[in-house]
Length: 484
Image 1 (cartoon, rainbow, N blue to C red):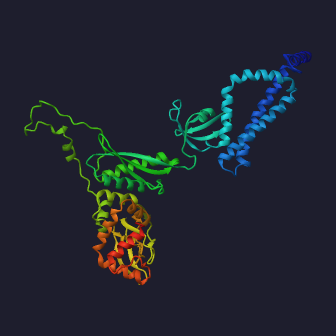
Image 2: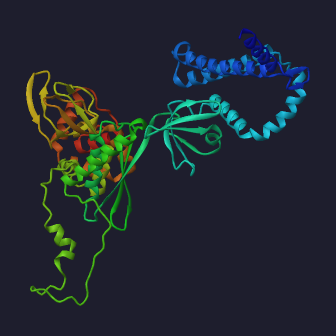
Image 3: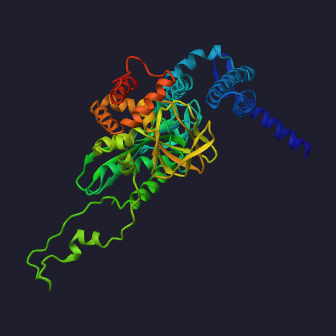
């Protein structure tokens, strides 16, 4: 039995030492091939270990994009060096194979040109860093049907993208280099989101603008800078077509879009504004008349249907509140719309102070929600309480005079604010507005005279603007304040 096992072992040894082919000074045997295969398996396993070790430990302190690039390059460099060492260790003389390998390289090159293309593209991506780990990208390629996802790994041959459905897609690197790719996270994660809205033709465009901007403020994920915009795009076939432009973090893009849809629908419904839909009027000819003599059946009449729609009580709108300000009372709807668009909403918690007595008066406020107490700070005396729908600070905005009282927030408050810079931009775009403001000021001559005396007492009246007539002084100050 022992002799039989010895013979079998001897035959296996001779089999492994069988000469298969001679390449240069190197004899290729099964033993050499098995040894080389084992080495290559160990090397590729080691490359994976090295890459994971670098990413998790040695490079843990740097950002994910640099960590991925460095770990990939170092691990592949280690692998290439290890492959050459393994080849030399197994007894293969590379110098003797150079001519043969050169000939094979030409043939292999044609067969592996796509792999080489992917490899070079991977190096370009790692060094250029235009597409990095954690970037949210969108592929403009019909083969991927507008694929949207986040890069989770960049390898030398391919890139792994995790889609919004949490599926992982492996894409050859050359496809990312050759085709157009929309990178939502290249310089910043903030991007514009457009929400199209179509309303019926009997809607008030100014009110629609107000409600769209209000919806943008009600969504916490919307950025305050750049400010949201409501754009009136077109007179559509069935609707007045608007778009709400907001800037959001692309990581919350779809959640924010859904939330804004809910908020916009709610705001429009609260003010009985109908979201438009395609419709056609149907007229039936030669229909027998009804008992009332009307040849048109009521169920085809859209107006009849609207008459039976339940009416929701309307709320006081920002447009109405602005018209209550005497300085803006004669503004047209388009001018009121400009005021609505340049303003912004500001929320303040109870117990905070909006401004102190003597602060620069550079903003005008309309209280939308909550309650504010106006106090004489130096005298510690209550002067007034501002309720929702009331306004204050308009004279301070127009004349740039200091605050004469302190505003304390009693309840959680939502304010509509127009600051000096935005109002200045508006007056420069529409010079005629300044004349309307001055005409409104002329109706408050006594108040202007009082403010002029206060400014003189504080030595804040410039000689170039001063005048015995307080209205002329106000006009001169308005021009100087807003650089008109």
